[in-house]
Length: 248
Image 1 (tube, rainbow, N blue to C red):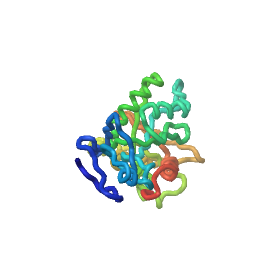
Image 2: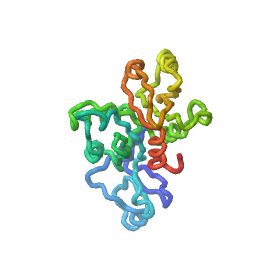
Image 3: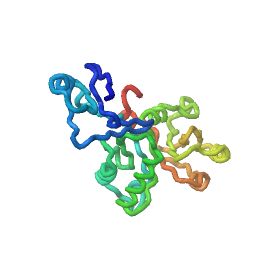
Image 4: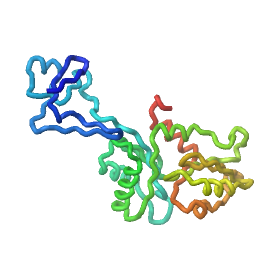
């Protein structure tokens, strides 16, 4: 019989029934006759085995670590026939077993928690579920809360030197761009457009005239891959709303 220290005495754990943990998720194997006991219960009524005991002050803690992600969905409510209520998006995410699902404004920004850190797997699962629910492809770009905080706090192109006629957008990509594409993007710079490629994001600073954007750049043609765009102000609001204070 294996023993583990839980802070209130050693409690026995049946071999091969312990919690399995990997780098990205954990799994509990519960036998049919499983019953949870506190430390005091164990001393007065020793069970045949105890899988795990959290103690009286930790009964509500999860046995598995939860990770917070924000999914940015492409072209939600941006075109004829692609209008989606946020309640529907939340239901799709909840159907995948995610917890604490929430949406922010109506452009396809979804926060959720899950036990896995495999973002590529999550993206594929979400895209498949959205395809089945909506009837069309919705490309999905996931960022973790720490990652999103860094994105929101980054200041591209020495923005302090730019006046208020410049507006920053952030382009989310699935993968890093190869060097050739980076050069092509940087070559798009004009008097009204400036770009900075950083990781899986492109910071696109555009100049406005009388409050309206007046730049047109063939990014889709240049990149040759799917992406989605959000205003930098929107990303800051999302980070402030959903990212952990310890990270922000």
